[in-house]
Image (cartoon, rainbow, N blue to C red; front, side, top):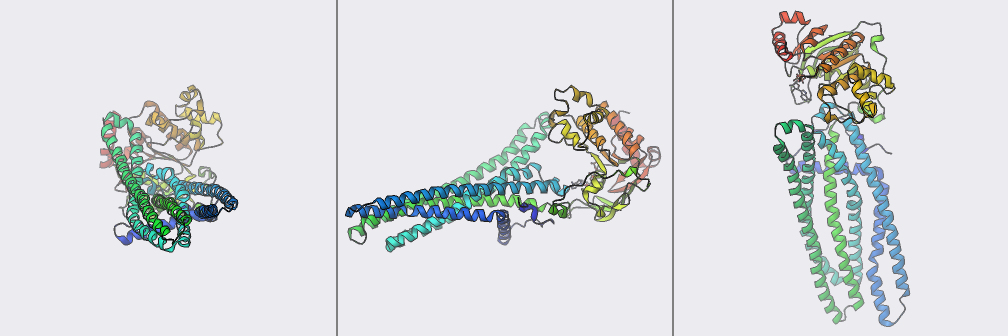
Length: 612
Ligand SMILES: Nc1ncnc2c1ncn2[C@@H]1O[C@H](COP(=O)(O)OP(=O)(O)OP(=O)(O)O)[C@@H](O)[C@H]1O
């Protein structure tokens, strides 16, 4: 299997696709074509062979009118027609076999292209820079792999190749018609040129409308996805109507453009079909006149007339092929946008290197150097956005609990993103046990961390799948021990399938998800545990579990929390007050409570939340 084409190109973020002017449109369209062709390149010989087989099949069909002409001529003079019949049978058989081979070959090549595209999208989405991915609607990104990718197969099988074979059919028919009667050919071609111009106006409309419909389907997927995720909130707010309206607005737009595209397609079809019927009538009338004047034989007129009739199918295929290629190009454009997401480590992706195995724990080393150091770091999520951390400096000791606290937007989560390398410093350095991050791979850094998000994700699969990802070799006893520590063990034991129960994220509370994530973090046994506490009220069980996890992990290594409970702040060995993307003050809870006005204000509100 060749390397997926999407993965091969543009490792650096590309500039946003320009829009607006005709030149910009041309540049976008050229880029889309280049990208589309780059996807086909690995299967070029199969596609070329498929097209050649299609041409052979078309050429065999083109002989039929000539054979009919010959049969009529032979019958007129009473000579045998067995040669004609044999030739017809042989050509028909060749046509059937070549069509079969052609479809087999193209279908396979098309499916390979779809797989490659999907593999490349998966690579980009799982190995790309996190802010770039989270800046886009998830379902829209996913729909590029699910809905857009198969359009490439269609474009290849029924777009490109039917275009080539239809063109062969048209050109071949022209040649044969020219041989039969040049004047009649001239008349036919004149009529066809007029038809072609009319179709050339209508068909691009179909392409444009199809592209807009696809765009709307992507938006609809992302709207529906977000709405289903927030189902409970939506129901409680009675917002089913407005949310449905928002989703259906996109569906409606898809329908509107889909209908317009269909109208344009049917108009092209009618033009082709109706136009050809008019041409046929004209040809028949002029041909009959020419036969009556002795300029051509009846057999030649029949053959010529058959060629005119044979034009209809290839012309329709040309129109169909054009429309299919347009929707394939629209799909390519959406897929190529995934390229704008830069890989975290392009060189490792290019080399096909997987993440490294677990590194030895730093806590086992005798050194007392800080496990983590932020040294004058300035960082932002996107180039054109303001800095979210400004001169952020902080040392995290190898053991103990450091709690981050600060108003909304102070940069607490961004500090964690920096530690996990989701964010890259524009200035300053982050060090792991004294080694600058730039000297380590992403996996080498992340190996030393466990991370529990405020609203942790449940991975697809069973309880076991969710835990084993942290330590694949853990025994059932170890898995249950981690669950027990988080007061989840008994609940799982009572389930009929125990650890092998499939998890349904939407039925789990935020607290249960956080306890499961904590169990996963406990199993990972990392040097640094990053924990973003749940802000909303959680059950006593979750509070106890969070507290137990912090105490245990801070004995064995470092724990950094984003604290939302006063007890967590009291527990911490060091409290860091963040403000405006930097450190405002540090100290113990008692020291800060006595000295820092912002801290007093923040803990005042926490006390209320805490019911203290
Ligand atoms: N993924 C992101 N992309 C762009 N900007 C972001 C992103 N995440 C956070 N920000 C911005 O960074 C700034 C700092 O946010 P951050 O979430 O780090 O603060 P915080 O102290 O954790 O706040 P909160 O307690 O509300 O989570 C804010 O202005 C926020 O809008």
